[in-house]
Image (cartoon, rainbow, N blue to C red):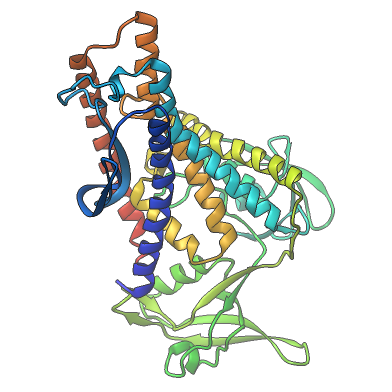
Length: 449
């Protein structure tokens, strides 16, 4: 385990804890507003590591950082209820519903203000919205469909192309589905091809093997005793190919070097001189085995830069609010698109991610730039709110469902039946949690290296 991975996990936990804090703050604020006695406000579960008590409420940070809770007097049907005026269960239905709804609502509102703020500050956007294909993976679905480097994607299934993120999403949720791409070839000819995405590794999502134009750079000067340093590779060189395979992402470089088994590889790269001349060079490099990273390396740090120039345009408040609303809607409905495609078999169940995966991704993105972490936190916050509103017994949506039934029946479901329903739901979610955690750890093994 290296320091980079450790820092990534710490930042990921901080990001997840922030979103949990916002969620529980919603429940807490609503409970206080409604006059309900709050016993505990905890970030995390299990043993209380740090705590203090104020006005009868224990505020704490607990040992297991994946989640948190607000415990209110009279809330748990399995505990002895004293029927005091400030107990949760004696409150009118509207107050209990408000408390349950406030947690998810705070997550959605928090995300909306994050997005508004980033749009007002200015989010880097490509100067052009054209999807110019940079890399088409050999033998990929796109290559077999006839997509080539230099082609411009005009529309996806009849809808105008709206950026690479939208294209990636359509491919990710389209395993085995025919997707029509209208393209303009580099010769200027308009044509339509059909692409059938395939599963990306064993991640459960689809890919067509299409990538935008990128440059993989040598981000720092290689050490003199490293294979790359001995071969003469320098900082700011652009890696073109390794063993004849075009490099469009640093993952390409990692996979090829890792699979080399220490055999010599040919690296082709570009170098710009002070006079502006660009030379194409090549070097034969023999990778070495790194015990720390548990894979073969050649001793370079990589960076990825898009060819497309970016522009930062700060938006006025009104425009930022409108853009944030549209983005929030797209983020909030994305989970339903994925669930629908899971049932259709176009996304595999193993694509789901749990707290471990979320922590890894938050930490990884946090180390890149502010805009990416803001968008990721907004995405997770909105989906945390949306998922908690689903009527799944142990979620806030489940509480709202029980309250609706109570309103219709004129009396609540018996404590005994509530306990049974929650136990069944808990067993299901524990099983699901174990499954997605196992998948997260399997996928995360690459991030640890």
